[in-house]
Length: 363
Image (cartoon, rainbow, N blue to C red; front, top):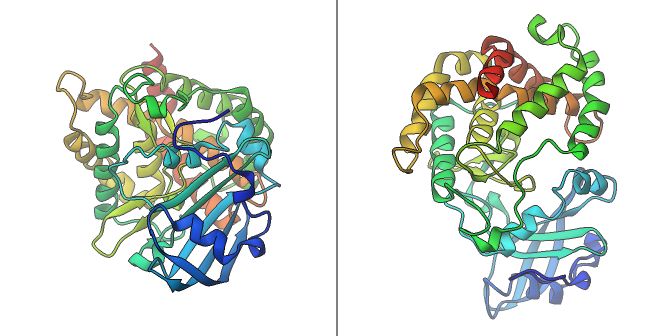
């Protein structure tokens, strides 16, 4: 099986980072650095967690190219989860498609998929070379930075408003958000433990729901994303997949959960998780209007202020189960990060009366 613009070359994915050679790296960056010939490379850092990641320094025998690059491939320990959830190949296919994304993201030199071996590879720019500041839940964004991020998401959503396989044939493979059994298997396994680990730190409005009810609310919310205007979603726009550039612009990385669906999932998942609870309470309404104002879509299709607020109120039904599940897992995120995000989405779930909003959307 082949896809436009995609090279299915298993030999191009090093089984170990130590197997990468100067000749291999020269080929990997050739599309954007013609004439560059790598003389030597040095493995600077590695992080074999949810995915395999590495950072290399490059020295050149001829031509010019990046001083460092960042590589990402699957982790054998987690590939079945990514495959089950429909995420394993998405990011590599997205960047191999050549479709421009109007939001800051890492420059990709090479994207490879090996379906037979359930593997993928991305050779990307090292964002540190642009002074990027990666964030996670322990270092929340400011209100102004979140506004930057929401304007970026509005550009993305506007560019793909009405998205389908017919409007963008190169992205015809992108799945519409559905509450698949694969996702629910993981949530039903891990949310109960997440609730135990978060005991005493979550609002009563959350803990009065049992884990089955929480997963059912997640499924109802995700199902709602297949109704209404469709767009291209990052799909996993939590703060840990963001970075801040020196000019204040916010970029998004890790596009493995890219989906087709309603705009609210990206907006709510990003906004609620990126701010402290105090900042979210004080600024969420104005920030949602910032997003609405930045949308460049037909006036008849722009969500009204009331409708946007209703859909935003429903979004913690997504983020809360995801981070309770992560809190109930080991080896994906630190306990500190998982608990911080489980608390943020749980607080929003309680304060925004998410079950009521979801019931109104369903009605």
